[in-house]
Amino acid sequence: MPAEKRPIVIYGGSFDPPHRGHIELAAAALRQLRPEALYFVPGFRTPFKDFRPVPFAERRRLLEAALGEAGLAGRPDVRISSFEAGLRRVVYTYETVAYFRARHPGSQLYFLMGSDCLAGFTRWRRWRSVLKGARLLVGLRPGFARAARGVPFEALRGRFPRAASSDLRGELFLGGRPPGLHRAVLRAIGERGLYFSAERAALRRLISPSRYAHCLDSAGLAVKLAPLLGLPAQRAAAAALVHDCARELPPAALVRYAGRHAPRAPLFEETARRAPVLLHAWAGAARARELFGLRDPEIAEAVALHATGAPGMGPLARLIYVCDLACPGRDFEEARLVRELAFRDFDAAFRAANYVKLTYAFSGGGWVHPLSVELWNSLRTKKRG
Ligand SMILES: [Fe+2]
Ligand SMILES: [Fe+2]
View: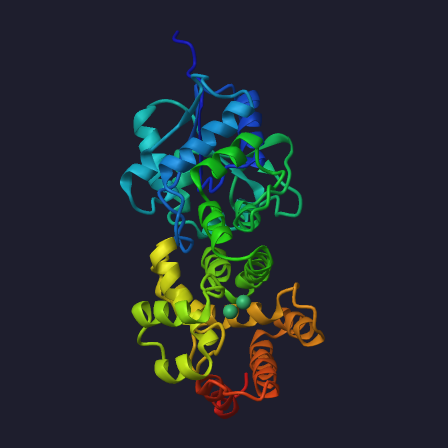
């Protein structure tokens, strides 16, 4: 009688970035099931998080670094599959299971996940066919449902830490070194310029340390508020990081740069004459495109309007407008109040930010950009919600 085949474990995810929680789960599955192979299957990209996705080749490199540090690299039973990435589209788990089913006929398949994914499992596309093809192998994490109605699963022995790539990305965008990542992964991220580390290094060369600190500070607040507004943290971080990238161009150079790269800034001539410093916002949007390759129109809008605001500005632009004023490094009382309000009632915080910025502009006694006043008026005529 032929020896029974050892099982196959599939571990899908974005691995953006791969962290200690992933590796612990995989190591536990290797110990418990002694599979013929455990496949990490990084997705091509993550739906709804696709601004500047870290490409598969880079995530593979990071995964290899994590496996190396954990002593799991080079084992024949630990593999990284390019199946999903190779299809160059969002791939559903039932398709991945079908692929491995065909590749390993007669083997018991397991699909590995943390219990944080279990509660939403019945919302996955064709989840019943996932269950037909594979058993679920679940690592229990604290604070998450331990069961999903009608979904059988096998639990891994042990308890696993709460870990979320999205939180880690938020820290990475701001130059943090989260302990949830292997040192080798952090090193590779820096070397490869991922998670805006290349942009931060370039930004440092463009502005003074205190301005750079203000940009990081704004990005920190933006990353915290973004999920509450349903905005991707990547876009929020990118826009906040670069919003003042043209702020320290001397006035004459700023007007020249803006004239060349952002001549369609509203009321360009008058602004250049009466309050040239305001052009740093439109010049910043152009510079972000030119130097950082940020071609996203929402980011361009957010950078261009962060100083004056404008009626009808989009959600990302509203976020950056608020964060520029209300980031923790602003040491005046109004900033603190707007910041606290932003977490409870963002629309109210946005109106308050406009009020504070306008009051500040009026108190200076100079020319006030009509866009700021138009924004004020538009907020008075709109129904408050
Ligand atoms: Fe600014
Ligand atoms: Fe700013």
